[in-house]
Amino acid sequence: MKNIVIAISGRGSNMEAIVRACESERWDARIALVVSNRADAGGLVFARERGIATAVVDHRTFASREAFDAELADVIDAAAPAVVVLAGFMRILTPGFVARFAGRLVNVHPSLLPAFPGLHTHRRALDAGCKVAGATVHLVTAELDHGPIVAQAVVPVRAGDTPDDLAERVLVQEHVLYPRAVRWLAAGELRIDGDVVHHTRGESQLLVAA
Ligand SMILES: Nc1nc2c(c(=O)[nH]1)N[C@@H](CN(C=O)c1ccc(C(=O)N[C@@H](CCC(=O)O)C(=O)O)cc1)CN2
Ligand SMILES: NCC(=O)N[C@@H]1O[C@H](COP(=O)([O-])[O-])[C@@H](O)[C@H]1O
Image 1: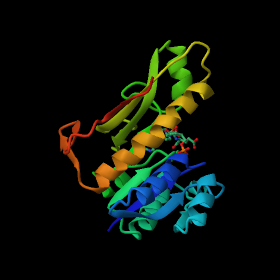
Image 2: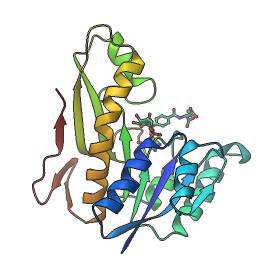
Image 3: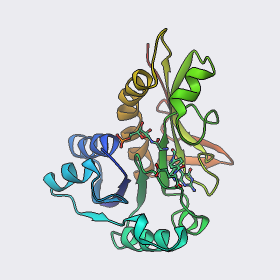
């Protein structure tokens, strides 16, 4: 059975969706560890209540980003992960960390990459007058929010939307998209051809919400 490690920084709603899907769909995988850079991350409570091992590596207690990443990588490696999932994890990872988990490190980003990498994506999409928004699951590379795209979900932007309205609409789709993508990665069902990722069994890599 494959081990999955999930890294969070906050409420962990995507982590929760993955935990629930792993159990209900009986994946040939288990969530071996939920790790956070913040001890007050709400998702840690859910994980502990489900009997999942948790750990905290507080980035503020390290002298450098490299030192934090080295400790985080050691804690993650101790769980022997086949897949490392970033789920609302809010730290930019160093090239050394990314290299250690290359090909099995995945993230969900709240925009339709390559549009709007970085932070405050929904505010920026609204300010740009976008008519659609969404989320992207991508393999993580050293360059921020730039890795090969595994799957995307599209939602409409509605008149009067605030960033919170858009975030809520996108999050509903993330909770469907991300578990599906993590299941594919854990099952070895992704084929990477340059920058293009294919699902080898032909499931749709696109969700479109009305
Ligand atoms: N090397 C990479 N690291 C990370 C990636 C990536 O693609 N490559 N994805 C991010 C996730 N992410 C967006 O999806 C993201 C997370 C954090 C930040 C950021 O600017 N973080 C600041 C601190 C912000 C905070 O603490 O609130 C920082 O690290 O200084 C941008 C994008 C995960 N890492
Ligand atoms: N750059 C990373 C980022 O912004 N991730 C975003 O954090 C939100 C909360 O996730 P959570 O409820 O799973 O913690 C999600 O929308 C996720 O896409």
